[in-house]
Image 1: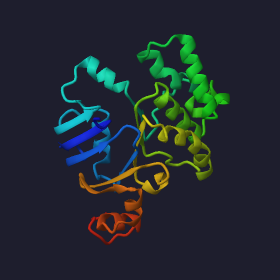
Image 2: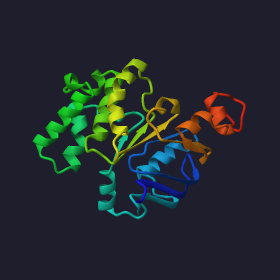
Image 3: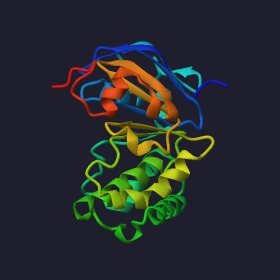
Image 4: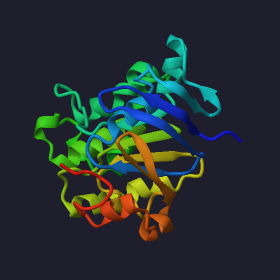
Length: 249
């Protein structure tokens, strides 16, 4: 069976260039991509979202290339993935309920009643049902994140990409959300990709850990290898050390 998402020797000369990226994520597998600032994480995310089209190599989803997709092909792929933006990206003049339902309103064939049921279920699971009519300016940071997450999973995507999750959130608020996240990462046919500067937060959720530096993969391994490997890049990152193979400025 083809991997859910596969990068084959992908290079891209973007603002954060990447070179020779090769990895695969199977259906039901969860991966953490991490590295220092300007390591290529932003470009990686854009490539996974099919928002950056000028690259060499090949990116495949369920065995089919993303290169050269027409409008309908791009739309179908967009409906296969969910994305929680690092800045959350809620629409400021919409309520919590409207933000979560946004994608379903525009890109699904659900009836208004079905959209309401899906949205209500998500708000209940995310403990924000009492905020359904609130706008983003009235929400706490945790409630904003939960709303963005609800919007990203409303259409039940096969692949969910979460960029810099939990930034600025209280550890207690994060803990109360973890059961929701756990249900998603344990689904046998769904995959979650975390793009982060803090990979340790996802030790209990991820199968694979992939580290970038200067646009290249410098470490790739499972949970045990992430904890125990003596890879010099990983050791420097784990120890938050200025001395090592990475030039930190």
